[in-house]
Image 1 (cartoon, helix red, strand yellow):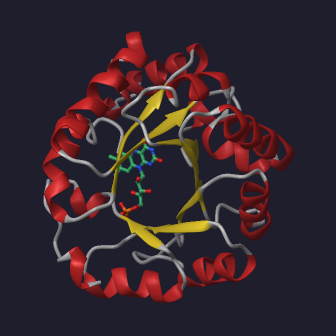
Image 2 (cartoon, rainbow, N blue to C red):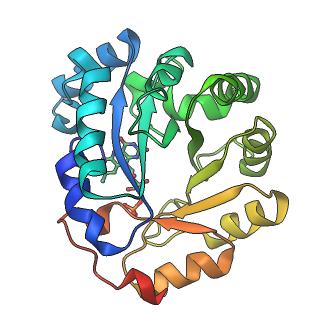
Length: 236
Ligand SMILES: Cc1cc2nc3c(=O)[nH]c(=O)nc-3n(C[C@H](O)[C@H](O)[C@H](O)COP(=O)(O)O)c2cc1C
């Protein structure tokens, strides 16, 4: 969660039994940094994340977590091209770089980043493949489901073919306050990639349902915003 999940926040979350903690998302090239500034200008302060020296910031934030915890640290990244993501994968403390194909802020999608990647399947493949080929960490791709005019199964297959290690799916179901478990089930039936199911996990029931639908792992954001987890992860 941009503006929330920094090193100190994740260090505090490390006691709850996660095996991966994600910092960011960060804007990491000039185009996304400028887009981020416009977003801040219309009152979304979570995009104010000190991008001036982004490599240094990510090194610093990830090492705060690694000093306290030996689980995996991932970083969610918005970039117009693969190279800045590849650079960040070289940071020792980073285990996973996550390509953000999820952000729906117009300033980001207008420059072809975030969710806009889902509308250009060839670019998504080439982008992911390039990061996979050159990264010195594992690679995750985070997508948002059910955005309209996008075939989520085709998208998932393309990400798998490109060689990503993780597919992180925000199984958003517009108009509902629970995840679209059918899309998770469908993706699982059509791919073999490690699938992280996300959206509206807030208790044991929703976590178990996500796993039963086929997710290999779960992630949660809003339910952890106050620095606590409202259920015992080990009981899933
Ligand atoms: C304040 C806030 C900031 C977020 N920032 C990001 C981000 O930078 N990158 C990203 O991929 N998702 C971001 N998300 C989306 C969440 O990671 C997650 O996909 C979404 O909230 C659905 O999961 P949840 O129901 O567990 O919150 C953000 C969500 C919130 C509430």
